[in-house]
Image (cartoon, rainbow, N blue to C red; front, side):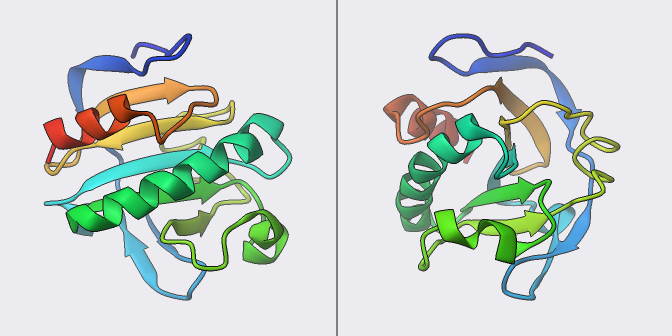
Length: 152
């Protein structure tokens, strides 16, 4: 996989299916990645102890507002923190982001191989990983919307 450097996400040239996982979100609703087929998923790995992660969260919130207009795009933030109570102070109370938690890193590290935060993947309608970006990014950048459009 190519790692992003600088300001533009890098294309992941080889098609690879995203590993499936199931968790309960911050609202108590079940989330299973494979059940999101037919939708584009922007999956962000982060932690509240990571300053760049916290810095990019407002732009993920902005992206979630725009993505809501599409109707077939999910913005998912998978945190290494213990739960919503640890991160709610920095999140919008009306957040459209699906917040999930993996404090033991069974999904983040063991299934996705992620060890550094933030890291963001774009998964297409067929469950294939199309982009991966390592590091903080302004997710309200128009290039992100063009990537999402491409995989809708």
